[in-house]
Length: 248
Image 1: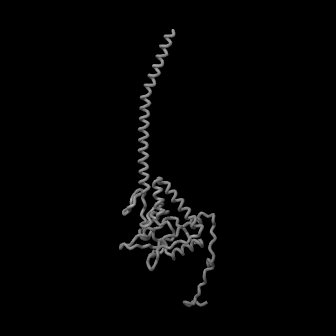
Image 2 (image 1 turned 120 degrees about the vertical axis):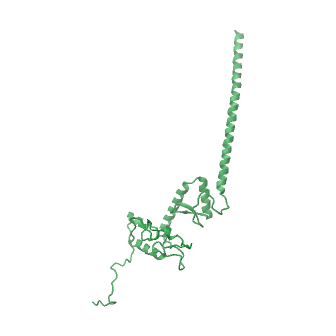
Image 3 (image 1 turned 90 degrees about the vertical axis):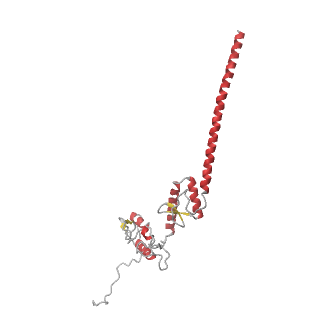
């Protein structure tokens, strides 16, 4: 066999991975891998990691990895070289950028539209939606009834949305945290629910005060009428005694 340069033909690998790996549904490691979120990635890196998951080549991290930008051990996802905070941080000139956390390329350059979205099956979408709703309900349970109605009203109008990662409510336009009871700069509308509820609280307090005053008046009247009743009983007793004496 000739060993001349350019005359050597390399054979392909024995197993070409033509079919996807059949995952063990009962394995906890497999369940963890399948639930791995593939976010903050460009389309090419997303396809690579999706292939690794499909063919059982994905190896999750056992410890936090170091970010190449901030040099902090804050990466908890495998095959990433930049943390999510550094990936979304604007440049020194103030230009917005969305870096791929795997390859480090800006997804907004060269006609890019940002991060690639992971294609989910209908079952996975239903599970994700159910989990999102359950998490949002748990967060709403921590709020007062007045604040809960305000948040739901703002969600219906499209002002506020729920962030499942941070488990907080944020504004859709600025991604700032929505704090219940606090107005954002530039907001002219007031919280109708909070105003109505505050009025209801004031009215209820007034009603309680009125009730307490009425109770006090009734108690005073009872105290005044008691001596009169006692004197009437005494008079009746004296008259009975006088009649008994006359009869004797």
